[in-house]
Structures are given as structure tokens and as C-alpha cells.
Image 1 (cartoon, rainbow over the protein chains, first blue to last red):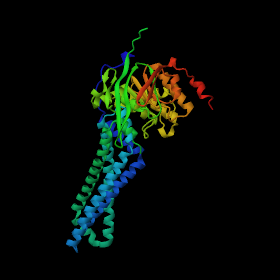
Image 2: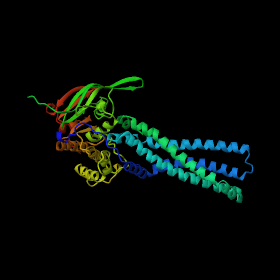
Image 3: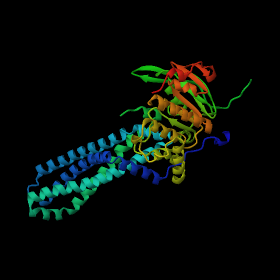
Image 4: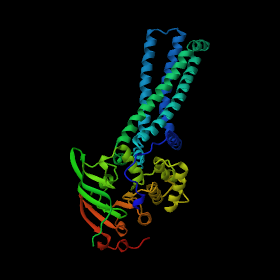
Length: 206
Length: 247
């Protein structure tokens, strides 16, 4: 058998990005409902943020009664909703990575490099975060538009066309925040799990 | 009769300490062990004796507090992350008590994963994966998920996976621990057959006495130390009789 032994130890081959993307995609697809719950956490956070931003934009555009008191209250609401969405997104991602420590340990036993593990989780998180944020931003804005339309009637449309740029920017901001938070929240636990000795990762029970 | 052996794994004065609640616990206390290429060696001992710790050290899954592990005369402590990953990928195959299959992947995907890590093309990996699954008797169940397989079948998938990159060493940690008597016996026989056929070195940490029958040597561990090492011929124990009739 000695002839079969390789001389010395060579370096590990880097896994191509396409394989990492495929693994991340399969993982989301197979764990569909679990992924949906993670996505729902992100979705709700971003939808809430967007609804508050939308209200602010329309109230400002209508102008009537948008005094300092209302503005201060709206700003507070934006800050609060940002906090709520941050907690929602971070919590969802932390949970979804933490429950897979064993899987990370196993992958390392099979010869995965730390960075591959992190890469797969980041692709997965980025994908989930982006999709959930897009849907959250659109639904949040749309739902609040409906509420404001019912409340203000015809005045709403004028206000909307006046604030259309701001509304679009808000949607963009929501998508970026959701995606970036999802990536950041996945990076830390994935990196920590990948760095641990495999034995420790395998021992963790969830 | 001077026989010289080629050693694939050597450990020297291995010590591993864990700190638990402020107390230092010595799981391994100076273990020096030479393992010959191609042998089937069982590390026996009660739970808590340190055999799983030794398993982790030999497999490069954890770092010793002091002492050295040589795999093919290479000091594991000298390897960087890339080389360690390479070693885990190509040189060592792991089998666990809890199987540790990736739950979302099919049997075939589980077996091909280490080959993908090794940079083998998907087509070749699938072809070889199917062959390996046939070898372990699961040719009909390649597209089943772990949850659709029995414990014994899951362990067979894990065995096929451990052989994916033709490793020189198979490390098995309590491979029969979660299996019933008969399934455990089948798994042991399968490991023995693969050991004979491919010449792979099998190192198994276990407290399953059925293992003694197939082992070339048995290392008894107690309180983190080697109690004794016995060759099979020296062990006066008929395991088959001890277990009695099967139902």
C-alpha cells in the first residue's frame, strides 16, 4: 500500500465558488421551512422599518400637522424600528447558524477549510437576507400605503408623487440594511464555529 | 524473530487537560502508542477513560496540551490550517458514534462531499460514490436522506463516506455505540472486510467487546493511561459465546 501514499502533505484545493453557491442553495431549498422562518424574522423587521419610514415620508409630503412634535415622534419610531429589525435579523441568523455547529464540525472533519464553511454560510445568509428584505420592504411600504390611502383619501396620491424619490430611497435603505445585517449576523457565529477545533464543534448539542 | 513494522501513527507522551468549572481534568496522561500500517487496532476502555480524547488527538480534531502526534512521521502540530484540512480530507476517514451525516443531503451527496472538497470532478465523485455505497450494501438507497435510513444504514453511509478519498487511516469513535447487537456486528464485519481488502489502517475507540474478535491488537485505556496492549492471540475470550444466542 505504500505506493498509494502520497509523499508529504500537499495543500488543500480551494472549492470553486460555484460549488459553494450550490451548497448554499441546496441548504436553503432542503431546509425550506426553517429558512422561511429565518426569512420571516428578517421580513418582519424590515417591513416594520419600511412602514414607519413610509408614514414619515407621506406625512412630511402632506405637510399638514407635520410639526416638531410629530417629527420627533416619527424619528423615534424610526430609531425603534431600526432596533427591532436589527434584533429580528440578528436573532434569526444566529439561531440558524448555531443549530448547525455539528454540521460545521462534520464538514471540517471531511476536509473543509474554515473559509469554505464561512463562505457557504455567508452566501446562504446573503441570499436569504436579500430576498426577505426585498419582500419585507415592498410589503411594508405597500401595506402602509394602503393604510395612509384609506386615511387621507385623494390627498395621499399627491403626497406620494411628491415623496416618490424618498419612498424609493427608503425601500433601497431597507433592502441594504436587511442584507448587511443578515450577513454580519451570520458571519460571527459561522466564523467562530469554523475556527473551533472540530472536536469542540461536534460536541455541541442543540 | 525480529519483525520491523512500518508505523502510520505514533503518539508520544500525549497529555490533554480540560478545565471544567475551575478544575483541571487530565483526560490523557502521557499516552505513547505506535500503530502499524494496515492493522486493525481497538482502543478499549470504559467511558471517561480518555479513549475519545485520544481519538480526537490522533484525528487532528483537537490539539493536545502537550506531546506529539505523528501521522506518517509528520508532526501534526507543525501543520498549518491548509495542511490539516488536506490531511483530514485525504489521509483520514472518520466514523462517529452518532454517524454525523449531513441531514439535508442524500446518502450519495454525503459520500461525495469529501471528494468535492478534494477537488474531484462531480461526475467522477458520483461514480465513485455509487460504487462505495454498493460496497457497503446500500446500492439501492443512494438517493435516500439520513432520516429515511435506519441507524445501521446511516452508519454504512458514514463508512462509505470515510473511504471516499482512499484514506490511509480510518478512525472510528464508538462506531457501534448507537446500534443494536446484530447491526453492530454487521458494521464490525464490514469494517474488518474493508480493512482486509484495501489495507487501510483502522483505529477504533470502543467499549464494545465484539470488536476484540476482529482486532489485530487491543489497547486498554484506563484513567487516561495505557493499561496494557494485547495482541488478539493473547486474549482468552470467546466473544461469540459470551454474547449468547441472538434473537
